[in-house]
Amino acid sequence: MISLQISDFFFAYSLISIRYPHLIDISLPLGLAIGPLIYVFYFSVAEKKYPRHLLFHFIPSAVFTINQSFYYLQAADFKYNSFIVSRGLDLPLRITHDTFISDPLEIRNLGGLFTTISLAIYTILIFRELLMILKQARVKIWKPERRSLIWMRNFALLTMLLVLFVVINQIFGGEPESEYIVATGLTIIIYYSSYHYIRSFSMLNELFPTAKYEKSALPEGMKKKIRERLITHMENDKPFLNNMFSLTQLSENILASPNHVSRIINEDFKQSYFDFVSGYRILEACKYLVDPGNNTRTMEEISFLVGYNSKAAFNKAFKKFTGTTPLHFKKDPEMYSPIGKHLITYKKGSAYFIHESLEH
Image (cartoon, rainbow, N blue to C red):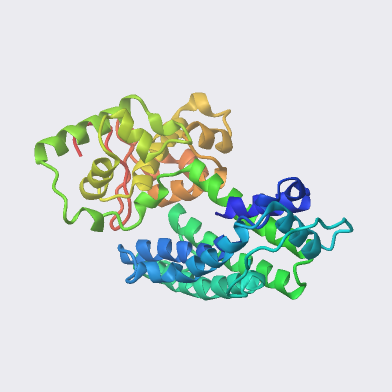
């Protein structure tokens, strides 16, 4: 819907709409649906269900759409004239014949105002649900560690920023400059969401990993086979060295469903998917650090070799698993972890490395 609204801006300011009048204002009713859709998403994550009277949230958008449909059914010349007048273009108007009413409720010109009010209300509701999610995860809004929580927080902030853009547009009465700002805000949201989805489209699986399994059953025999294939694949094939490695890809590699793989990681290893993968990556990094043949490698190079996109993320994960920095570990590895087959650090109350064997 947001992409369609951006397209609507493009059609208008490139004057494509003059050539194809039926494209004029094709996205106008969608603004009233964006707030409810984002809110429903946040609510479903926080409450693990959809809000009561779900469809009621979309009644304003439905009413506006029905009213707008009278405009959509108008002749092309009528839409052309309305576009020329609303944009203040110095172009001749076309002769039109009498037609049926195009705005029975007389609310068509209030679409921007209604969208602003809707987004403002739902942004408040979105932040309420976000705070509940962060409370359940026991983290503060500015200090979430999971990528999914960071994504949800940032997306909520972008929604709030979008409200600001729309308010600016209302203040300046839909001038081109203000509409460019709105289009820019919409584009930022699209790029941000798309980038993080492509980077790790399985990240939402880490939210509240145990609750989703309460009503499902997984036979112990099948569970054991999947667990063995999982560990064998991780240790022998080392797919985690790919920085685009995801839960879905892991599940496909071992011929199991993402739900079952996630459950085994959560229940058997007491970890989220991301901690599970990080354990293997940090273990691999330790091998690089204790090998004298890798003395010429930089920390940044090692971080990329073991699957991290940045040195900062690598340092943070390394300290979480070993209690020290990669540099200190390299100087005196025996102080932090036994050098041998496992290179395992056990810390009470914290995550731990996975054994390099089928036994756990």
